[in-house]
Image (cartoon, rainbow, N blue to C red):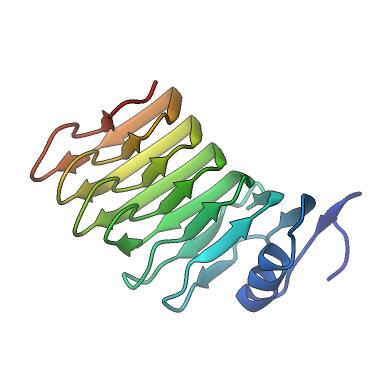
Length: 187
């Protein structure tokens, strides 16, 4: 995995990406630049980030991470900070957080396109946050949904959500509130 620029690594497979993210613990950091135009299926297992400061950059050709309708794309917990930029995030499917589950962690999403993400049994079609901080900047969303609340984002338990220049089309909550955003006891 040759470095792209100082501090960035280019994994050659989704397995290498998974190893880089799960291997980063104890307050460490990892900066990943995905290959130009890559389209990687996660094979039914979300990528996990815990106790790490991680950046995943899809480059100017927007690499794609695909849940294949079998899993969410990321689990972010344990005080981790995950920054996602220049990516297409598609076909996520989970009970809560069809795209990303944030628990006691920070998520920054910038210049990302999300589509076909579903929380099939709960809330947060794209993101479900509990005691987390979520910032979405220049995000384009199409077809995110939740069986309960928060078709795009559901935030609970003192979570904070900031959204800047977010375009959500066909985002819906089938059984609750917040076709785009539902915030319960958060900011």
